[in-house]
Image (cartoon, rainbow, N blue to C red; front, side):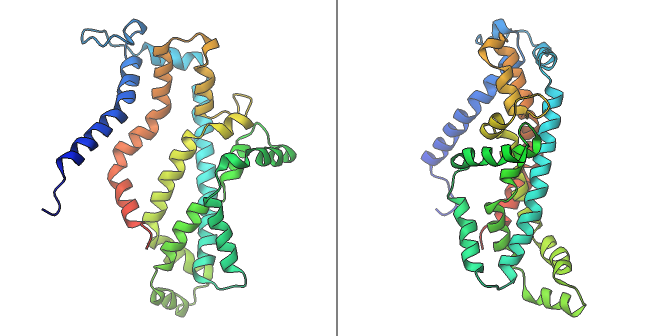
Length: 269
């Protein structure tokens, strides 16, 4: 019958869910128990928060959190501004070479960021921005995915609303702000969630361009903290890992309905 899930599909879904949850469950178990019980799954094992306290004392996680929040905010604001303006231009204006320009934007979707690491590093070095938060953020401010997603959303806005705004004397930027942006709110939410989660977890590029605590985000700080030469035990490392991923995990649990609904509404039309 239509709408019913096949038993094999249900079993496969549960199996994949368990595989995904197993490392997460182990991380929480190890973080909340003494090191002697990290690999001993005994129901009588004592619970403790000391691992979190030790991790917080042994590394400047407060600074890492601050750097990460500033980074993801900087990137998200820059992406939203640039993507909105570019998508508006591609969706509602006709100019010479617009098709070629949009094709070049789409070409960026096919290029892995890792391919551009060397050239990006040279550019950042010439600008004198190495070991700064702007050095991490600059290569990501222009988002081809954001431009494409918003362009498709803007193209679905009824022209009657635009004409009504023009009759009232609204200019192009006023129309963008009062007509297009409010109607594209689900798309902004969906893109914002993707952007924040990606740059919160980004590791390779921040590792290359940062050398000091003043600029390191959480991912790089955690890698340095968990290096074998630090001599930190495994329970403390997993506690630091849980602290690093906790904000995203809590945000997803609180806003998972909005997350799913935003992507459903922001589908390509």
